[in-house]
Image 1 (cartoon, rainbow, N blue to C red):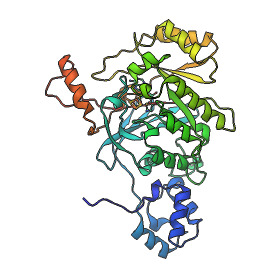
Image 2: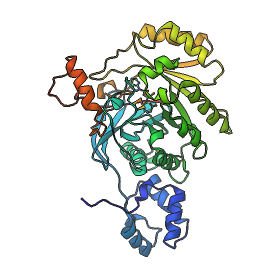
Image 3: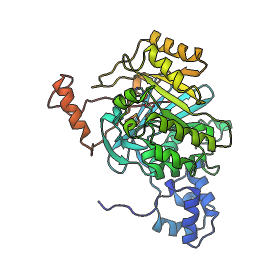
Image 4: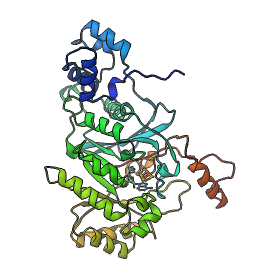
Length: 392
Ligand code: SAH
Ligand code: SF4
């Protein structure tokens, strides 16, 4: 199959579209016209873009493409959550989840097919890494969700208008290990000529890629969520291998510096997945409160979501509540994130899609699981129906 090398108009930010039009000898304002057609009106056919001359449309047809990832499966939960599986150019299938809440609708977007970081409690991590999503495949998730919700079909007054109001980069993959493509897509999310989401409504979630957090302020002012999950380096390194490279003190320093670079008073979200008997003890809550004493933040507690082959368990609801109460008593804003879309497997950390593992990690885990009798020795990767979810 011939690889497409022409630029994909869907994945280009305003700055890059302007450069493209300059190269074509066209006026830069064509960039704004294209953005509005694609991202505000949902139009993908150049011939339907009536304020663009026929000659330019013909030139664009020759030198560019407008290509979206394909939605291959669609799940609807009884609670209103939706999950879509898309196929990306590498052939992998990745997942995105839409979570409607009072007054807002959050889309949990994937940035990579699989993930190389191997956090021990995460289904995506267990499946290894396959590929980075292109900017078109990332922004394409938002386009699709809006399309499926009817956002492009008309104004709110004539029945259309349900749309994504918040985006969290909490789907499959580590967004900051696909830096350029994620920045390009986030740029589009926040561009008034495209989706026009405010900086408070677009959240990057990271496991702590410190050099990338240090670069962030030169590219965006989006909101930040940090996957901490442990109050000390010893435990964090055990469950999140990235901590051996970038320990907690370095991570918090880089986050502090990013937050201080923002002109408004925003705080990061600290994500803490509560895993039974691993990080959910009273002592862990005490340590966490102590660690974050001088670090302005909000804490989101996520009860662990199990997946096939995982060695971990979710703590009892009473344990989750008392962990939360300890943090609140210590003066923190600590929320427990409720699981949504249970019936369609749409919970945080469960996203698995279908990823051909280029790191061979999956094979290694399958051996371990088979040895422990969790799967049959000859089986493929543990089969699951669905995938992920989140809301910041
Ligand atoms: N790679 C990024 C974003 C994707 S994961 C990151 O790690 O931040 C989104 C969130 O789900 C992270 O906070 C992650 O730690 C959490 N998570 C992963 N597996 C989980 C599981 N099985 N149960 C609950 N939360 C999980
Ligand atoms: Fe990757 Fe995030 Fe999962 Fe860790 S939690 S393996 S960084 S997707």
